[in-house]
Image (cartoon, rainbow, N blue to C red; front, side, top):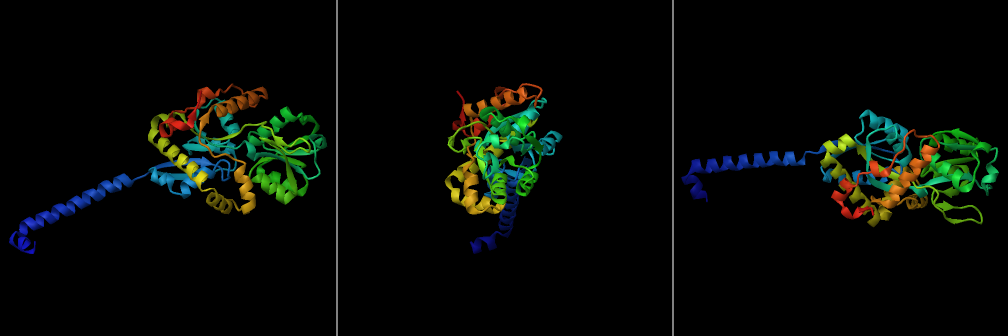
Length: 342
């Protein structure tokens, strides 16, 4: 080989040039292949709405799907809806109530997957000595209008016979509710995890009922009164113009859900650190949610029931039907077995 190179120096140089050129071209193509699509996803920094997205980002699932994700967290669903409608967020994960309100405006938003069933994470917190709703007559109750907090409270009114006119309802943010409950300024709060855990511990409270369970003395046991879901959504225009991005986001979400199911202890430890929640408390918070990115008949029924309830209370002006704004096609393209509609 040395002799050949010496005998044919021009040929050797040409080969070297061609090799270097090939390497440069290959690197150029590699750079193109590694280029990632930027997308902004909005959510809340809590274990109900944001946990699977946080896991997808932390484990690198978004990057492996070809995305450069800017994951932005908002203090409430209303704030997220404002950012989404304003165009600063392309996709998001939100509870059912603010998203239903947005759709009813009407606004062309579509649900493409469930992120989690968060019904059990919606909880009504009271003092330790409260054993029935009758004891809340004349008392102050904190809730947040336009969110799952109000949705749970309205379901309690309907299912347990609580008369809202006999209590003073105070519209407050989650942080304000916790502070007011700890200081004794309100006697009960309708909240979601992990705020409920913080309210219970700091204010010596307890769960009287949740969206899926009764803890009323003598009436303990499963009782679903409120179906709430964390939903992955995008606008109709974004779905039409960016099918590859939507496919990649759902792919990362499904991978995150699979990872969370198989690595429960590791995920609980990670989320507990992120949310500053003690390990034992994080186990309870985690157990109150079901991280299954499906579209099934149960989800459709929950959405329709919520919309009818909100319409009856005049919280929305137009009817909203799940069949018209839930699009199962993107999820079916990623994992057909996760679409379970009859």
